[in-house]
Length: 187
Image (tube, rainbow, N blue to C red; front, side, top):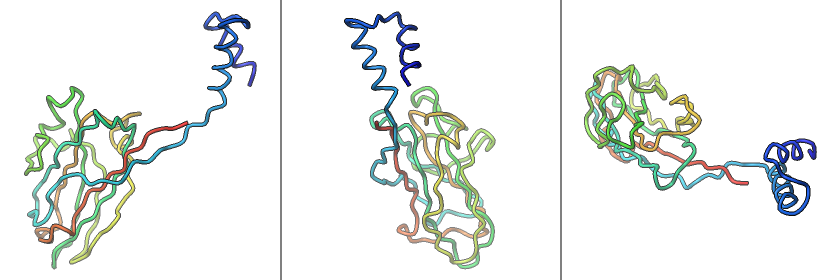
């Protein structure tokens, strides 16, 4: 381990005495650090899915990551189908690259109905094959950075749901949730 630290110190032009010795000690300390994930408290994303009509989309309120600065987020889903459902429920992610001026596929950042202009502009999280009157709980986990194909998640992002189950979703609000757990690194 000493050789990489000395090579790194040489790269920065540090001498093995005085301030250079302090920097070498610092580099040696860094070389021995192990970073582990630190998980935040699980919270829910605001999206109203109860009674979502068949063939309808719903978008969540935007999740603003500019304060928490999570490096990543783990997502899971809870939903319930209606009495004669048989089809699919799909969840997509939308994001911004300009701090929220525009979002993927013209999402608005509000918990509201959504009409896609081109679903290919969204990022598919998962599609679930569903059966009638079934409660799906804890479906996941899904890593948001993997969905976007990036090392870090966007500053602002949200979820879009497409109900293709053949029926409106169950009408009880408590049967639905999009859960998120933020992740940061800690030494």
